[in-house]
Length: 197
Image (cartoon, rainbow, N blue to C red; front, side):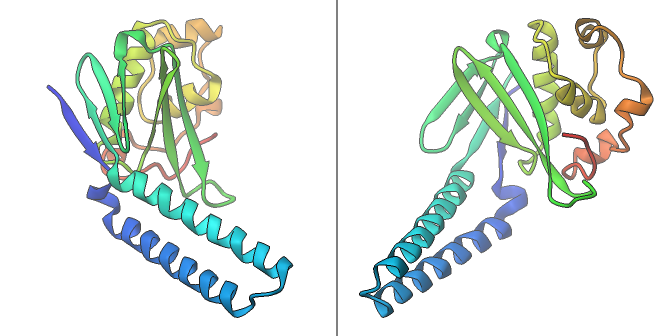
């Protein structure tokens, strides 16, 4: 059965707020650019800020448009184009954690899948991220993909781990090293709040 995942379900307010901030920043920079017209150095500075605002708006647009569709055989990402991967051809899987605070108590995960030189990246703010992570973990196991230690730890934090991974890595993860306090059931409803990576 195919599942459909978007960022708008959980991030609509944040996405619209990012649009507004990018627009305000762009208008402010354009105003300053014309106001201080004539000073080449200042012009270059504000042109740089305009570029940053446009990049932020573009990234927000991509997240707004993004739709991930997953079934038992394929996963696809639709934004301005379409990237489609066959699960049985997945040859690289990585699950990273990006912290928003120095104590690593806030942050998000990013799932990266590669097959036939094509890549899909999915952030944990997307709805039902756990479902995608679970399918990616099974694909990694079935295809014999060797995961790096950080990815194994992060999958283990979600309650997703297989003996084959420990055997390929040359040993099992000790509780002290894995040491996650993430509850995988709770994570089905919200992004991770603590993890290495």
